[in-house]
Image (cartoon, rainbow, N blue to C red; front, side):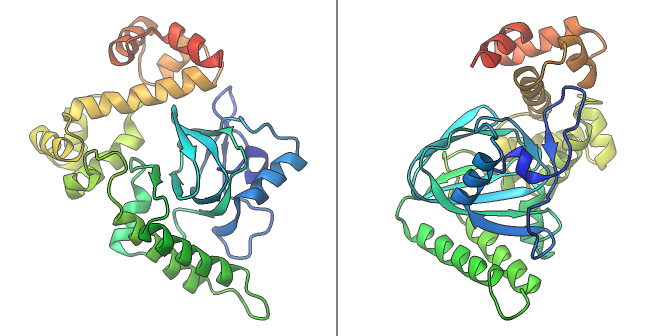
Length: 301
């Protein structure tokens, strides 16, 4: 949710999607910041940053909308924002404000290393594939999260004594564990159902999707059989392992086609396709349109 000129760091260059690291204007505690969403809008206005700038960040952002309405796009899905909307944008996801509107709320930023090393919080922080938006409305869950975020804000902004990183870490862990209790926002499958096998597979997939699309390669690297990976993927997503692998590659292809000017042949090579024609067939099979048609439709918006 942080505009790229406010996040710090440098774009990845070469026409790629800008990626920025964690570098808030005032870092009271390393790896953590909590501010009003309106503060970010104001920072963007002062720097003449366009609200629809597409970017990635290398840290997590959690936003609880408390006022107004607007929209936020995360990986080709536009989410309506209103009081009670909770957004979790993870490192590497592509995002932009499609319509900041009049929204305000509590916005916290934290690096993957900041939360305490509890097994549950580590699992949540390391899974890039979890839900990104919940509509909580005026529910008891909203009240609980709002109160916890208020405690985080009070500690972060405390005066007259040093801010305690440990208190912030424990409060953040409580927030994450409360989020873990929320029902899946669209009633879909539970990624936790795949257990450790699925979590390890997704981590390896994130590292290697551009170099191999063979299920056997992932099974060999992780010490499992293809059948074991298939069972884990089916439990977590309802899909076979090859579909999950290809879906990750197709997502990155959509990101690069929509948000960069790189030639299709360059994108194909980046994603492990020596021949652009093979990439074109792959992309069309998984999206229903050619790379050129997809790019034209999304860059015209």
